[in-house]
Image 1 (spheres, rainbow, N blue to C red):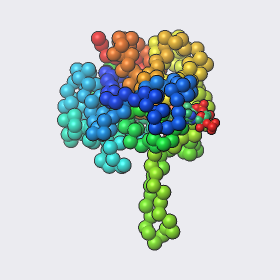
Image 2 (cartoon, protein in one colour; image 1 turned 120 degrees about the vertical axis):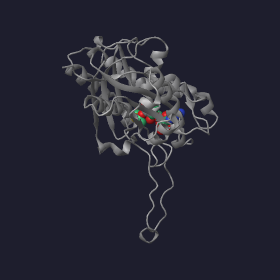
Image 3 (cartoon, rainbow, N blue to C red; image 1 turned 45 degrees about the horizontal axis):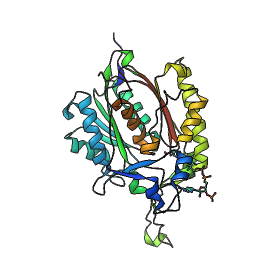
Length: 334
Ligand code: ACO
């Protein structure tokens, strides 16, 4: 009897229209292209148009992912979106709106919240749904319009993030050479104060002496996150490779979450990946949270670097804190 594996059948991304350079930020905050480049590697980021919502970005990526998988929207059994900047505060989910825009109705759709590790969490969910034969074709999308939750007066955070979406179809295969071999995900709420978006809670007026604080933008303790990110990302990779008796040399591409070039270089060096193995898009897209890994995979795909059967090691870290890694073979033939 054949084993059923989950398989990454396609990849696609959407890059929003407004390219914003570091020098554009010099006009609104006390910063410089030199500071941002040196500390983060970031040169540009893309922001959505005022008229675009997160589900619009997700729709664009999702549409192409379905086409590249050789499917139609009607073939998709479920849509799952990871976002920290959804269309609405809590409902409807961005996945519901994205599905409808794609022409998918009366199928399950929901969002998950795992910040920058969202895409790894999505892969974990999709893998389980495929291996348990619950669904045949799953559309997973990381989509962010982070520009809508940034404080453009806070130089510590606003230069670091960008908008975008990345999507793929996860289907079934009997061929281990097309399989998602492993997905490891983890979280620890102990670190809630390092990276968060406060919520403006209302309280029944008679119970509270003061009105609530009006803020709901990203807050981050950059230095603490930096150290934890390097440690966790390195550990993730060592664990997942050891579990499969693989070494860094066995992997075609190392695709880390694109938050900061210095983090990626530190991790890459500790793990002995060559520059050719390390996928980098942080310079042009900045940190697009849940969209960052699929946008990076799409980048090497569209540049004809990624080939059918290539083994990718994905590695993410984000608010929650959340983290995770995955060993994935690329299963799109062409
Ligand atoms: N322009 C100019 N100066 C700045 C800017 C800016 N945009 N931002 C901060 N500074 C200043 C600070 O105010 C500080 O000044 P001070 O010494 O007078 O107080 C100085 O630069 C040094 O700041 P540090 O925090 O020491 O700078 P650091 O080298 O740590 O770099 C950074 C900051 C880029 C945020 C870094 O810590 C980092 O990348 N951390 C990890 C962040 C991350 O990866 N987050 C995402 C992971 S999770 C997710 O993606 C949701």
